[in-house]
Image (cartoon, helix red, strand yellow):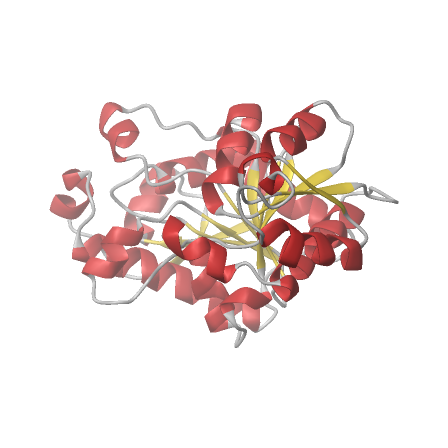
Length: 301
């Protein structure tokens, strides 16, 4: 039997538990879910579940970030990471978490990407956040930072790392000779230094060293990607990447962490408390995340 996909279901007050169960059921995937076993098995008695503790009705019903919910989602995530690091799973596929809830539980937490790197014994900038969709595939040089901190965080090694990881992911998806383009940080890629010198001093040398094109203005880079004229884009900061990805590939893009000792994919949305409260959970993003994990690990099961 193949190794299971390891699926921590995310914030118990959000859509994560329900979309995880629905997606596993829809794909018929061999998966092991991590969360409140009693609640998960009530949704599907045939699930393979690792219980990380009972979550009170009041926590689930709150439909907002709570310390108890934060502790539950972090416990599920860490239990699944333990199995992934022990090579007891085919890949890690994470449900949507709420950073605020984990912080309220007393654990410093800027995001799953950074937490995964730390748990794997890596520096936060040793891994790359990717969003892989059918129209836009993008790598991020920086992730969860205040916008004013971004320029100082853009270094040549980080740009080269993002270029290299994007190319590796595209290779894994069957793109033999990927063509990637690097977006600039500033408007019009700095306009030859008129709007800043990050492109000239840092980004252009990194792109050349990595064999990527650019830098070009971000709007140009993503237009080329959406038109299929390039295979991927390297973006400088979080929203530069995610706005384009979610506009082009909503419910189909998958958040992938590249550079870990195991494959990790995730939905590209948050806990969605409002959707959970209204009964509007949409499992398409989780189906995409599970499917991408299967693609990236084909032949490894």
